Length: 300
View 1 (spheres, one colour):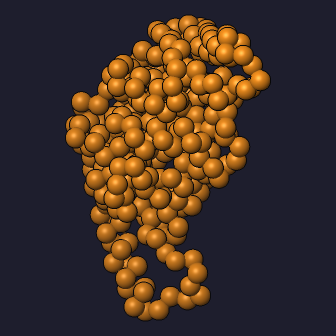
View 2 (cartoon, rainbow, N blue to C red):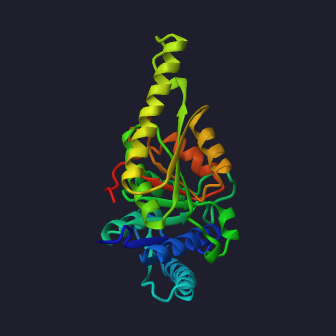
View 3 (cartoon, rainbow, N blue to C red):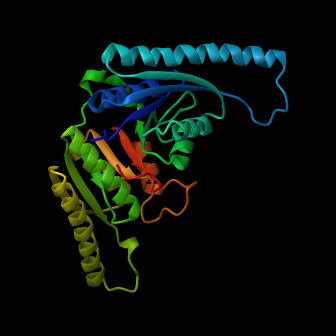
C-alpha cells in the first residue's frame, strides 16, 4: 500500500510565517513518513534584459541568505525526526511560479507554507506569494497562520478535522483528501453545511426555500458521512445558517479543530486564477491551519 503523502514541499523566506508552516509540515511528515523538500526562492525581476555586476553581487548575497534559510528548516527536520529524508534547494525566479514549478516537476503531494511571508503586514491580507500559490497550484496547499508558530512541533496535533461541504465538485475532492488523511492519522471529522438562501432561486416561497436548503444540506452531509463511514473514520455533521465563511470559522472554534480541510473553489468558483471567496476569507481569518484542495488535485 502506497503512502497517502509521499512528499511535502516547504517554501521558506526565513520569516515567522514560513517557520509556522515548516513546523506543521514537519509534524505531518513525521506522522505520514513523507519526504521533505525545502525551497527558498531569490526573487528576480523578470522585466530586466540583463544583470549588472552590482545586481549579481546582490543576488549572490541573497542566495547565501536563502541557503541559510533552507538549512535552518532542514536542521529542524533532522532534529525532530532523523528518519525523514530532506532535500534543500535554492532558486532564482518569481517565488510563486518557482514554488509551483518545483512542486509539479518533483511530483510533490502537498505544499505547506505560512499565510504571511516577509511582506505580510496585516492579518486580513494574505501574503502575495501564498495567495498566488493558492490560486495556481494543482496540489493541496497547507496554509498556516502566524499564531501557529507558538506551538512546538511535538505539540502539533491533527486530531480534529473540520470538513465544510456545499455539495460541489470542489467540496467532493476536499472530502476525498480530508477523509483519507483522517483515516491515516486516526482523526475525528466534523462536517458542516451552511444553509445560505442566496444559493437558491428567489422565485421560491420562504417555505420552499427552507425545504430546499434543508434537503441540499442533508444530501451533502450524508454523502460525506457515507464516505467517512466506509473509510472507518468517525464523523459528525451539522447544518446551520449564515454566511459560509462565518459558519466555518465559528465551527472551527466551537469544535476546537486542529485543521480545516476545504476546496479552493466551491459553487461560485469558476477559474484557476480566482481563489474562491469563501476559502479566501477562511484562510485570511482562521486561527488554525487550512488544508486547501484545488479541484485539479488528484484524488489520494
